Image (cartoon, rainbow, N blue to C red; front, side, top):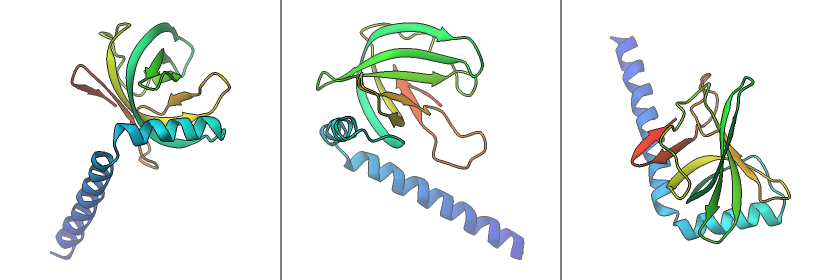
Length: 142
């Protein structure tokens, strides 16, 4: 009985954590996220998780050496472009992705002089950190 109570308590904590994180995303407007992207770029800030929406403006060849990555350029509503590197060894490849498609991404921003890149758009297989995702045509890839 004691074990069941402990498991139930852990599940309630996990659900609460998930709920709080979902609320945080809903309360952050896309305009706030664009401002964060600009701040990270201007201040050369890296290793920050960010949620951003935009249009796929260029599909690039996949990296075929492990870890393999699907790569594309995303343009945000403010005109900034970022390279997206989506690990296809840990998450499904987005086979239906085309130039001009709208996507929503949650991943880790890394600064570079070209606008930066976003990676970690997948779950953490070791469950040690927060995972990311990509939503395309209503389907979540994580």
